Image (tube, rainbow, N blue to C red; front, side):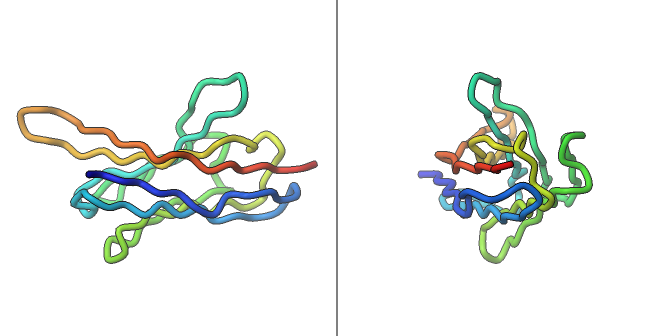
Length: 120
């Protein structure tokens, strides 16, 4: 059974930092494309950052230069370092994992989410 478990969310003042972690189990982590998404109240879930198994990184324009995604394959964990946080970063942050299955396409997995609240 695949599990993605996020941690590290919380309440922080504008300008502060948080580091989110997502521990994966039940998958071959090293071949998974991992990512972070977020959903603010009343809004659709949106991409924050992705990191492929080969090291390709993609960021949403709104977080470029402030957030950094990384992974530790030995720990089956993906991280999101968030600096210079703004009130508009307030959202539930979700960990996402995708694995390509030959002949089947992509299998997608989600964590339960962790709340990040940035006060002004």
